[in-house]
Image 1 (cartoon, rainbow, N blue to C red):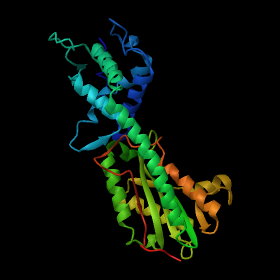
Image 2: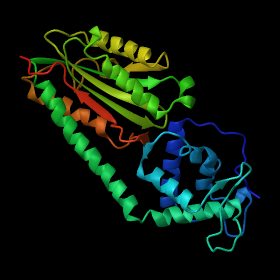
Image 3: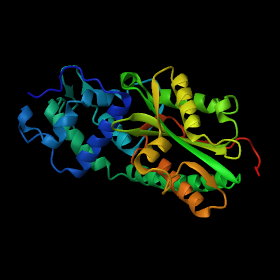
Image 4: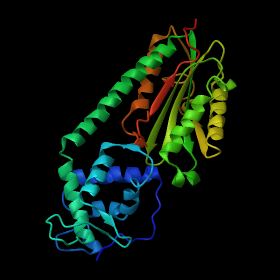
Length: 322
């Protein structure tokens, strides 16, 4: 009989959440059951679902914690369905009560087939469909709001220096990294604004927490400075990167988006970092439009602290510059 009792599989919280997301999408878009009727052997499993079944234990563990989280619609769908069918982990295998009230427990293969069937049924619920629509709507509103915010910051001074950095975590720390840690690190970084000299003459910033297959939890950040006072983009990016390493207690590393652009394209062109003049409306519009990538849906958080905001913005100091 097939069992998920594989050697202990270790995934980070981010990896496990993405596995659930991918599994639910595979269930919704790939027809058929996980196992063929009346057959349990491993070779009979649907090959498109086989990869996920062996991770079922760590996928379920995402929901077994003390922290209150908000989940994406696919994670909510998975969690509500496994609770509905009363999925049980017996260490050696999974089981659940038969839905016909026959006082028997299903084999693991039958149980997983039931999970697949019920996920498809529950995906037609108003709650699931509303969650999907709400996330798409939120992304559109964030895109609009960020565009307006960046346009406002870019018009604040005669010239603006734009610095963009990507803030990551080192691979050795990822297995134990939780999304709560990333939100806390972002707050510590934002708390340095107004206190650390690297942020002198800062006019605005955007910090967006995201989640991706390879990078896991990470932050895309953009900082805007009064370019009449600050012009050394590479220096500012380096100092912000070093500060990120400090607030993550050595677990983080960083990437200078401006330097990457110069390495690939050279100076000029459709750049979105560096010094921009307020009078150059086209360039300022291009920067504002590009910043909408901070609201893209492809790297959205599948799990976040309850009521947590994925992005934060701020202006420093208050009032309009000249």
